[in-house]
Image 1 (cartoon, rainbow, N blue to C red):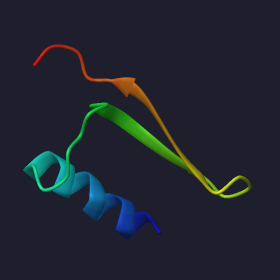
Image 2 (image 1 turned 30 degrees about the horizontal axis):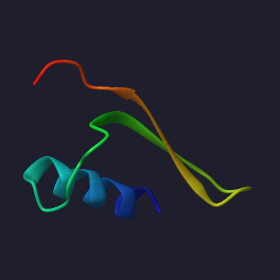
Image 3 (image 1 turned 90 degrees about the horizontal axis):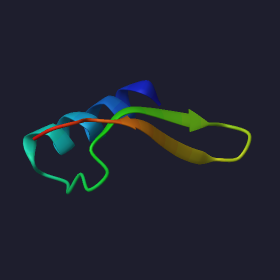
Image 4 (image 1 turned 30 degrees about the vertical axis):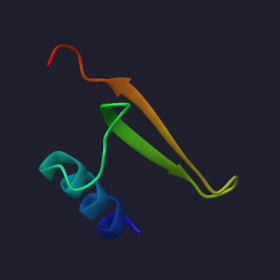
Length: 44
């Protein structure tokens, strides 16, 4: 799971996926099967 999330994050940084929220940190919650994003990047 960690590797899959890392690949998604890398692809966002490379511009493959649109990163509209510009999150710095994403957390996957197993109990609710959700991905929570927080700590948005300031600036650029």
